[in-house]
Amino acid sequence: MITHAARSHHGSRSPGRGPVPAAPFMVAAAVALAGLAVTYMFFIERTAGQYLDESALVEAAVARRIIGVQVSQVLDSLPATSVVIAVIVVLFVTLARRRWKAAGIALAAMAAANLTTQVIKFALPDRPDVGVTTLALNSLPSGHSTIAASAAAAVFLVVSPRWRPVTAFAGGSYAVVAGVATLINQWHRPSDVMAAFFIVALWTSVAGLVILRTGPQWNVWLGASQHWASSRWWAAACAVLALVAGIFTALILRSVAADPSASTTSFFLAGVGQIVMVGYGLAMAGILLLTIPVRRRSPR
Image (cartoon, rainbow, N blue to C red; front, side, top):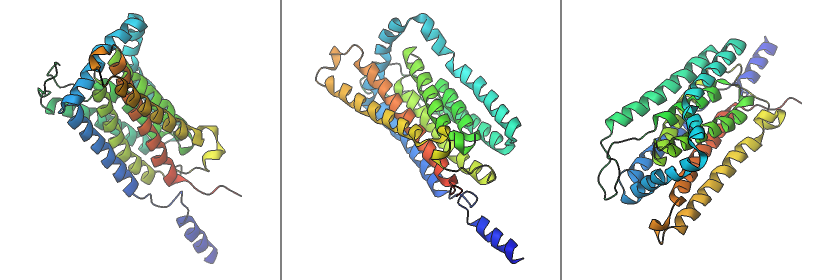
């Protein structure tokens, strides 16, 4: 009895099997919600934000001519393709590893993100007239970007912790490419894409907490050094790409500040930089959020 009690006590103290604190996930959700609000207030309600957004959308026509109609048509298919890939991967992991609860939660989060996008899109008023020539119809958030990002998030949530870092990097890259594609095809402005990313991040934070609290038997790992897919380099790569994109965007906007009318592609490139910065920044945050709470000491 003493041995059994000792084992039970030791097991309850294991970092990988103890209750996951809710505070980091709630903070992450709050940050995502704040990012969504700030995106709307600056890029929709402010003249400078609308000007940046609209200029990026107009200059995207130059990029489309450069890459060609065929390539743009391939980019058009990315959101739909992402859903197919996500469903296949989630079903495979579910059937192979029997992670039924995780799969259900991940798919529910994916559905909630897309529903939220549509509710916001139709609930928000038309873009206010702040002196910028633009279509008044509200296009925020981007439905296509939400589909792509939420599909990547669903896969990220359902895989084991060992595979989450590489999945976050790959999924973040996919979402960024899909978001840039909507800009190149002039479907959405950069702010529409960033808003979609924040919505997906919000629901991923909530779903991540629920998953970590319902699957303690597999939500553990032996550390970043135990497998190439869980290497710290994936989080570092996301951080570097987000930082470089932020610096790149700032330098471009500074270069055209004196004479914005002289720009031909600068605002488009700045818009791409914003999408890359937010996309990889959230991917890095996802890696930290869903791997740190499930770490356990490596076996001796």
